[in-house]
Structure formats: structure tokens, C-alpha cells
Length: 375
Ligand code: PLP
Image (cartoon, rainbow, N blue to C red; front, side, top):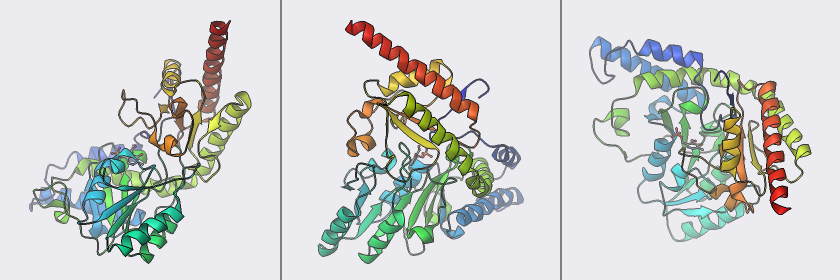
């Protein structure tokens, strides 16, 4: 990232050295973790050790950590793994939740993007009266806005009505405490590449008593919950990143200062700027900035040309521009004019200075161009 200012940590964080080293070491292990010989046992040891570390990180049980190919697969397993359930998801979930269950009922959110608990309670009551089994899926922190959801309150309500709860904690991990017991949830999805681990590996942590039907079959790995030889190298990197994640959480206060300065400077520069979710608790690294009249994609391209990496909307796969359902659900007038700036542990004051300078120049140029056209 030598010459680039990287402010897209919610898309992916840089691989940390610890993960790199752990992965290099795991590359020398030839065995398949399912093989009984010494080399297989060495691979199994890596996977099982990581399982314990990751269980500890989320307050789970190592017997109930299912390694997956990432957050997307973990979410798909959670949403489709329970039999005969009616699914409720918040209206602002990641596409890997929304699209995993197109039949799900949506829990509305308020103008800050926070789940409407009264609406959820009414939905739970109706379902309970109709004798339905329910799974509620509410994320801990939103990937686009950073808005933090009242997951423990969702958990409490769900318990009252005998419903199960899944929480997508992909963006929260390493930034907020993620503890299944405190959150009162039955399943939690996490992903390595958001915490400095490799891309393409994640996990679903499940509570005792939750029986999942595998979505990938064959081989019987992961206690028959997810077939396929485990990604031993990726899992080794995931564990190394997970180990530093608790210590890193303490450093989030520094990230908060950078993010807050960025927002203050932009707001004084551009009074028309809107910050999504500003009226509620957000991840301290995330800013969703709406500059009316200027498409997010145009902003992303202008910033990229100036060497600054950010995202527009949810940017789930590059090149594909989708208007943000999250901002639409929040009632934002121009969801297409949003960009997401997300900082991380390696972000610096200079990164913020460069961003503010480049963004202000871009806004000024656009305003002058508009004035010339109008003249
Ligand atoms: N859930 C959330 C909230 C995310 O932000 C993401 C990725 O951006 C995912 C799930 C998907 O995770 P992965 O990229 O590991 O598939």
C-alpha cells in the first residue's frame, strides 16, 4: 500500500504480519486434517487449536465452531441451516443475509438505521400466535454506516418468544466485544479478512442445542456441519489475526480520534454533507458520507485517481454498482451520493489529511463545473 492512502478497511483489512507468519508455517504441513497419520495430525492440530482460540474470542464453545469460506458462507449456513423456521432479518443486513433468505420478513429500521424493536416484538408475537418457529437475524454493526444494533435486546425479546437469534458480527469483530452469552444469540458469523487475517476464511459459532443442516455436503468435516477439507493455511492465519484482535480493540480509541477529526473537517468544509447514522452509536472507524448531487461512484473514481481508496455504497463486488438498500431503508434522499470511508489500525493523521484535501478539491472542482454549466 506504499503510495496509496487506504481507507477501505470495512471491505478488507491489510493482512497482519502475525497471520502471514502463521500461514507460511502452515504451508509446510502436507497432511489433510482428516488423515490419521502424523502429517494429518499436524494439520488437525492447527485447525483444532484455531478453533479454541476463535471460540474464546466470541465466547463460544470450540466444539461448535464451524469453519467456512468466509462471512458470506457462515451467514448462508445460519440462515438456511435450521429446518422449518420463519426468518426475520433487519432490513439493513448484508446481502449475504438478505439474499440467503429472500422469503424472510424484514424488520424495519429508524432513520439512523437502528432496528425497530417494537416492530420486531409485534412480528414475534404474531408468529408465536401462529405457532411458527422463528429465527431472527440482526447484525452487530452495519458494513456501510457502522451503525450498531441493539443485539442483546433483540436476543432478550427473541427468548421471550422462544425464537433463535443469529448475529452477523463480521464488521464488529475486533472493534467491539463479541460475546455470544452477553449478546444472547444462538449463532454468530465472523470473517478473517476484516481483522487482518486472510480472505476466504471465516466461521459460524453456534450455541449448544442448535442443530444445523449442512449446506455443503460430503466428507463429514466440521462434525457433519460443513463438508470439504478445511482451509488449514487460511485457518492458521485466521487464528493469528484473532489472537491480536482483543489487544487491537484497545487501540480503537485512536482510530476514533482520526475518524472524528475527518468528519469534523469535512462538515466545516461542506455544510451540505450528511453523515448516515450520526444520531446513534456507530463503529468508531466508519463514516458514511452523503454529498448531495455527486454520485458516490464519481467520488470513488476521483479519489482513486488521487491515490485514495474508499468505497461507494455497499460495494460488495467491485464493478457492480448497486444503490444502497441500507440507506434507502433509512430514508436517505440520495443514497447514490454516498461514499464509505473506513479506517483501521494502520490509518494515520497523514491519511486523514490527504483524504480531506483530495475530497475538498474534488468537491470544489465539481461545484465550479456546475456553476460554469449553469452560467
Ligand atoms: N457480513 C458483513 C456485515 C460484511 O461486511 C461482509 C463483507 O463485507 C460479509 C458479511 C461477508 O464476509 P466475507 O467477505 O468474508 O464473505
